Image (cartoon, rainbow, N blue to C red; front, side, top):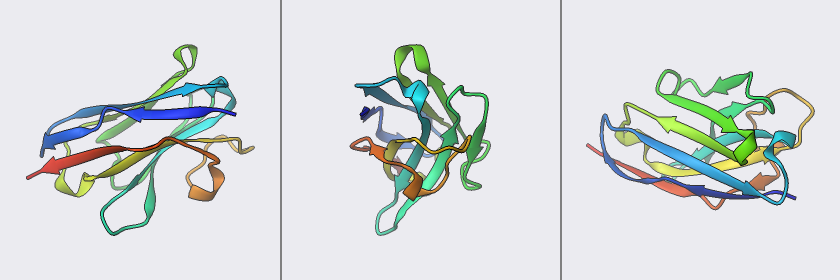
Length: 125
């Protein structure tokens, strides 16, 4: 099975940018649909973005479209989430996840079996 380690979070001012990383080990991430989710304070975990196994297809939550970009580097077994134009409401713990689903993309929490430990993003106003 694959192990995922998230990193790259931090404290940033509104309007700023961050790049989150998710390093995988144990198996090649090319076998998995990959995604990012987040959990805001007091809220349920929510879908942010997903990317297909070969990186050709992506899907985003409406709340992050145009500001967040998911990408993957299968050769280095890593996925990324580039976040720009950060807003205070983006404050959350961000998790990467891997799915063995049969579809091209996966945006439901239940489709993911493997999860990183999360990385905190805090946006100050």
